[in-house]
Amino acid sequence: MLLRLPFPDIIFALSALIVAFTVHELSHGLMAYALGDNTAKYDGRLTLNPVRHIDPIGFLILLFAGFGWAKPVMVDTRNFRYPKQDMALTAVAGPLSNFLLAFISVMLLVPLMMGPGGGISGGLATFLSYMMQLNLVLGIFNLIPLPPLDGSKLFGVLLPDSVYFSFIGFGSRYGMIILLILVFTGMLGNIISPLLSFGMNLLFGIARFVYM
Figure 1 (tube, helix red, strand yellow):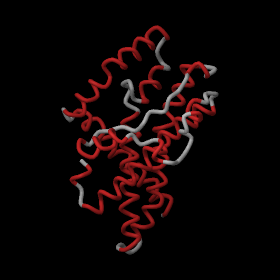
Figure 2 (cartoon, helix red, strand yellow; figure 1 turned 180 degrees about the vertical axis):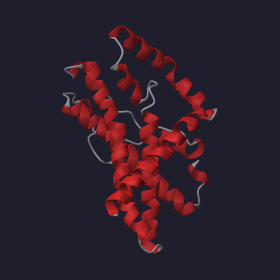
Figure 3 (tube, one colour; figure 1 turned 180 degrees about the horizontal axis):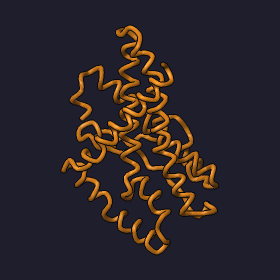
Figure 4 (cartoon, one colour; figure 1 turned 90 degrees about the horizontal axis):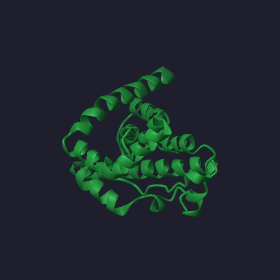
């Protein structure tokens, strides 16, 4: 839980989360717009202004429970040429943006780790460390193939239409309940933790190779 962190770290972690949520939701909107749906544009979601993307309740719950959400970007699939496939592309754009932010963060972090710590460089390194970790967590979490998460739309491309709509309908009714059970039983952590470790090792491995 974020509020259990030392005070300076809370500020760095919250800042990283705001950036991660904002870019994630903006990426959904930009992809939908590129594929022909103007809904996000009309809703004012094609912006880096975090106020347009952060859900106050979801963010507050995140502080206390370690689980929260941003405002979902609305999409009208009737504007897509290939609704199921284009919805999957729109959905996956969010997690991919988080992985890109994590990659950029580690590429900036490694040189700072090689230099002297403290002062501005120490604070920036802490912020970048949270950027890397939280973006990886957000990207991995959203790729879980459970509605309403983004991974369900990506998984749905593999399903025939009759099964796809039943799957999405089931998820809209029970997905959040299943998700909460996974969170509060610790099962979600057991899924994400090894993937997070793998992702961090991979990113640091790439960065060290680049800076050798």
